[in-house]
Amino acid sequence: MAHRKPPEGGGGVVCTQTSLGEVLRSPDRNAFRAINSKRVDIFIVDAVSVSILAIEYQGDGHYQNNAPMRDAVKKEALRKPGVPTVEINANDMKPAIETKIQMALMPHIANNAENSIEY
Image (cartoon, rainbow, N blue to C red; front, top):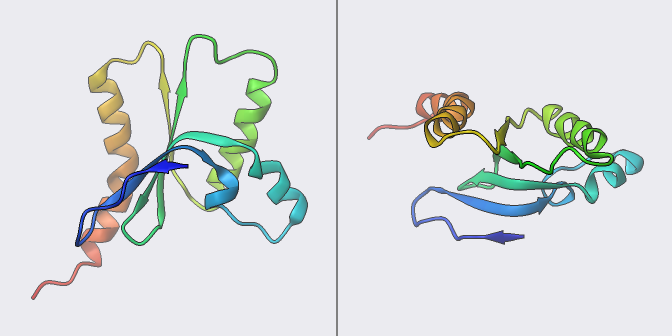
């Protein structure tokens, strides 16, 4: 897993090609085996390692072989613990990508604002 250290005092970590087995757990060994080898293109965690967003890039050659089945397993594995997922398509323009990510992050940002402490 490649990632960058979060800035002092907060921030988060952007991870690339992250194995779902590194960030998701299951008491069911078979369920864990089903997700352990699946990778998400970009995975973002906050400063205390809470999973906040998964981003999948669906390039031109994405829909080959058993890709739909692999994607379904990943989507369900991320849906159950409530990790939002954004799909970026090859023809998406920058403004659309930014909007998708902002919309997916809104609940996390709102929750952090509610739980912040002012001095």
